[in-house]
Figure 1: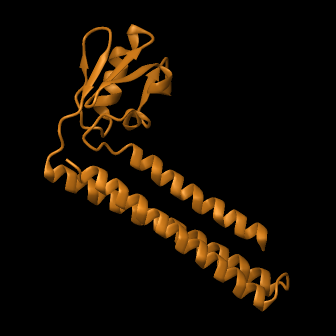
Figure 2: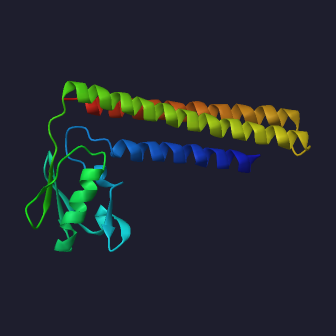
Length: 184
C-alpha cells in the first residue's frame, strides 16, 4: 500500500512539474528565455533544441538575443521561431537573431490568463485521474485479499488528502502566473 501511495505522489508531483514548465513557456510581457524551450531547429536533419545550437541572452527586459554557433543556422532558427506559436517576428542581422517582445495588450493578457486557467484545470484533471487509478488499485488489492477493508479506507483517505494538497498547489501556481501576466 505504501508503494502505491509513493507512486501516486510521484505522478502527481510530475503533473505539477509539467504545469510549471508549461507556465514557463507563456510569455508575460518581458523576455524569458524559457519561451524558447519547446522550439526545435533542423540541425543537419535532426530536430535540436535552440539551447543546443547557440547562446541565448536577455540583454534587455523585453529582448532575447540568439547567437548561433554556426552562421548557417541563422535561417533555420528564424524559420523555427516563425513556425512556432510564439507570435514574434525575429530580426536577423547576419550574425545574431533578436526577438523583441512587445508590451502585452489588456486583451492579450486576459487571453493568456484564460490559457493559464485551462492548463491548471487540465493539471487538476490529471491529478484526479491518478487518484482514481490509485483507488481502483486499492479496491483490487482488497478484492484479492492483499489489504483489509480498513486499509482500503485508510488508503483512499490518504490519496484524497494528497489530491487535495496537489490541487491546492496547482491553484496557487495558476494564481501566481495569472498575477504575473496581469501585472502591467
